[in-house]
Image 1 (cartoon, rainbow over the protein chains, first blue to last red):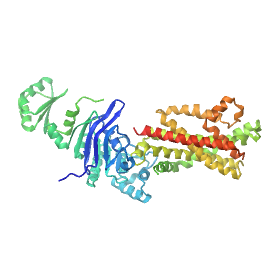
Image 2 (spheres, chains in turn orange, cyan; image 1 turned 135 degrees about the vertical axis):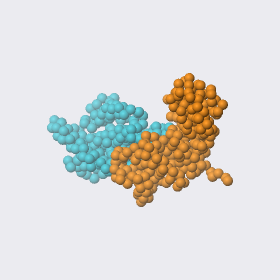
Image 3 (cartoon, helix red, strand yellow; image 1 turned 180 degrees about the vertical axis):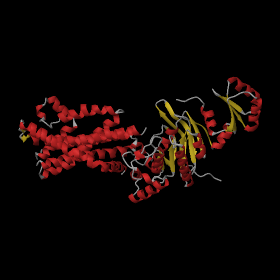
Image 4 (cartoon, each protein chain N blue to C red; image 1 turned 90 degrees about the vertical axis):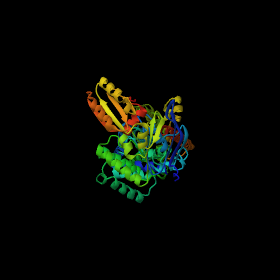
Length: 310
Length: 249
C-alpha cells in the first residue's frame, strides 16, 4: 500500500544562533493523522523545530514544508492550518475565558457566529463551562492548559502542536489532556508534541524522534525503539559495589548488556524471570532487587546519556 | 486586515475598563488650565497677543496626545511582549510581526486620540476653538497620535529592560514638553535651540495646533504638516522592520 503524502516534511533543517547550532541538519517526515513526538533533554532543539514549523522562527537553511506550503514563503497560510500550545502559557490575561476564544477566533478571520459556535463547542469539549465568564487568572493549571488547547483548536487546524503539554500538571489533569489528545487523533488531527516524559510519549506517539544537541539521533515507533535499543526487560539491583560486581560476573552470560550507575546496576535481558530467580538463589545481600519491563526512559537515557545536562 | 485584529483585541480589553480609564483624561486639562492659565495667567496676561490661557491650550492639547500614544506603545507593548507573553499567542495565528506592530501603532494612535479628544472637549467648554476651522484639528489629533505611537514603539523595539523607559520619558519626552513652544514662544530661546527644536516632533504639532486654534493660516503650517507626515511614514517603515526583527528570530 502506498503511503499518503507527508503533511510535514523537513529537509536538512538547520537553525543557527551565532555560532550555536540549535538545530543541525535535521530530516523528518510526518504522516497525516498520526502523533509524532520529539523527545530530548532541555536544549536539544525540540522547541526550535516546533517554532520553525509554526513560522515564528526563520530557518537558517534547509526546506520545511507544511500542508504543501513552504514555511518561509507563505507564513500566514501555514499558520492558518496549525494550532499551537506553547510551553509557557500564552493566554490573554486581560480577557476572560470566553473572550480568549472569541478574540483568538478573530485572528483567523472567523465570523462572529462561527466564533461563538466554535467557542461554545470547545468550552464543552474541554469541560470549562463553569469558568466561561471567569478571568483566566482564576483557572487551575489543568484548566489553563485545557483552555490553551481549546484556543489552539478554534480554527479546526489539521495540525496541533503541543510543546510539553503536561509539564506542571497533576496526574488527573495529565490523563485528561491525554484523553483529549486521543480523541483529536481519532478525529484526524495530526499531533506534534515535544516532551521529556517517557510515559507521555509511549501513551500518545505513533513515532518518536529522539533529539540531542540539535540532531535527531533515532527515529522509530516507541515499541521499535525499545526493541532495537534495549532488551525487553531490566533487572535492577541496588546495593554495595562489591555485591553488584559479584552478581555481574556471575550472570554476564545471561544478559544482553548492562549499565552501571552510581548507585545501581541495570541488567538488560530478554526474559527477567529466570535471571531474577538465579540472582535470588545466589544469596548475595543487596538493598533491592527488582524486575520490570524496559521503557522508553531506558532508551532515552541510553541514547542521550545519564549525566545531568545543563 | 490582520493589523485590524490586533487593534480589535486591544479595543476589547479597553471596553472593559474605559469608564475607569477615561476620567483622568478629563481632569488633566482642567488642572492645567486652572493652574497655569488662571494661576500663572494672572501674572502673564498676554503672550504674542493672546491671553495666556489661549496661548498654552493648543500646545497642551498636542502634548496630551503625545503622552497618551507613547504610554501605549512603550509600557503596555513591553508588558504584552515580554511579561504576559500575549504576543506569543498572537503570532502563532495568521497574524505576523508586522501586522502586530501596525495594529499596535493604530491602537496607540487611538489612545492618543482619546486623550486628545477628552482634552479638546474641555477646551470647548472653556469656550476655546469654537469656529469652523477647528474641524482641521480632528485629523491632526490622529496623525500626531500615530506619529508618537511610532516613536514610542521604536524605543520599545530597542530595549530589553523596562527600567530604560525612564530615560525615554525623562530625557526625551519631558524636554520636548518644556521646549517645544507650549509655554513660551520659541523665539525667546537661543538660535541653536530653535534649530534643534525644528528636528523634534512635538514642536511642529504645537505650531500647527496653535495656527488652527487662532485661525492664523500661513504656508508655514503646511511645512509643519509635511514634517509630521514625512517623519511618521519614515518611522513606520523603520519600526515595522525593527519589530519584525525582534519577534521573528
